[in-house]
Image (cartoon, rainbow, N blue to C red; front, side):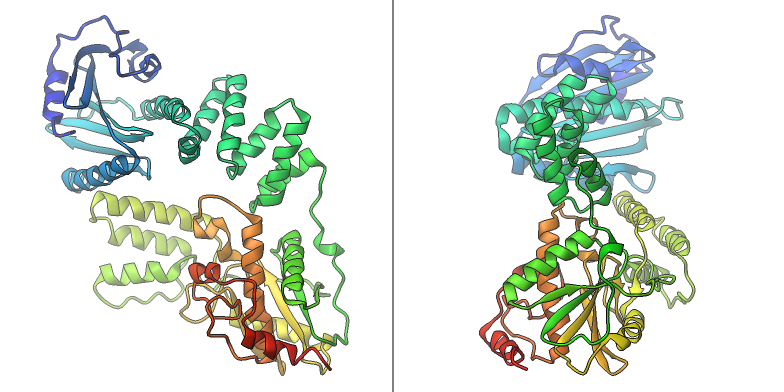
Length: 512
């Protein structure tokens, strides 16, 4: 499949296209005509075939533009394999002059030149097929990629929705991202009733799609249904903007940072004192405190600092170590990274990878886009010392009161990519700093948001942040939350149940 581009080029050079235009082959839905237009007129169907499970239709407009649509039936795993194989093949075929516009698990768009022709290929997975749109134009023509690409994506997403709906709820959940885009297209076309009907299906089959939930809540006239979906978002969204939209519909309000009590001197007894350090989700911290206290029979208090907490300039750019490694490797020698800014890293990374293959260049560009949107990282060591100094007047001689600063800020130490928590001696006392930055979808890239998941992860990592201050030996039981976790997978493997050894060691601190 797709090795007959020469055939398409020959067709393009011909001037024998029919003016009929509106005719569509039987294997394509009629609404595909919306994407088969040139200069306001429909392209003419000049040939079609159905051989060995490969369906093909060729459209043309007087030799100016030619579009070939090819389709082959396949099941989910086979479709994924075909996409991966063809992505690799086209990456090799395009050479240095080719470019990928988008690459995802469901599609890729490639642009390159061949035999004095400009080629734009849209390779897409459908629920039960692979479909490839190949547009060929004269090289150097003024024919823009947009709105053509948007038009093709719109009809493909409509097709994905239609096919997934026929196949059942599992497929609808698999294609939730594309179906959500179909909803957006319907709304742009002011087909709000249709959009609402699709959303009503989507939130049942893909309830973790919180964007769909809040859109449905904002669009429906059913007050009960709107509140139910808004509460789903309120309870599960990690993103502050989503929660704010839910708050408008439910009348609920986030607890205010300023409403938390201020630290006072003389803290005593076996307890954990959580000190929220902005940026910090107070409602999340309250949930963590409840989980931790219930799981380990330990009192947890939340108290804020009596002074403003400030973060200075970040010591690291987001994923700086990875960028340094690539730049050093590609440069072929030592590089002095002293004083480099985010922009400098971006420029140099783009420069040293400029001659890489198209797919590698695409991933670098995608990576740089994510870097530009991410905040920097802060050295935990520096801020642990700062926190220890601030906390000193509020401590007593009872080390059983464990102080843990909690933040959504991204922290690291030494050569580590990031830290869940760090503990050090500051002003003669042990103090910990705990971050949930790398427990959230925004950093992990997980398919859906879940405040409950973040709260549970944070409750687990609060165990070492607290118990290290009692100098209890670390557990060798991988299920013990007090065991070491070097990343998210290890963190998720842990439970909220202490091993016998850890529990017995903690119990020794329960009596004065």
